[in-house]
Amino acid sequence: MGLFDFLSNKGEKEPVKPTTQPAAGDSTGFFGNQTQPAATQGDSYTVVSGDSLSKIAKNHYGDAAKWHQIYDANKATIGNNPDHIEVGQKLTLPKL
Image (cartoon, rainbow, N blue to C red):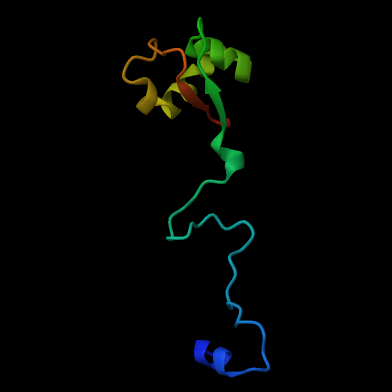
């Protein structure tokens, strides 16, 4: 049944439904690109005065040595020097 059949058929009130539905756990976006589920993207954190990546890692993960994971996830925001984070920067804290 096509669009014109729907318009000319006065007995039917609903358009034809698509035959394929994306699976509930499907992570493919509209254009076929892979999207990451929100649960695995991580939390967001805004840098405050006195913060360092190791302090953030200690508070969030319980281990200051995991600052590398925070840095790797935020290189584009932080830049080449992991010791130089600025108040107000929004960082992504990845799920480990």
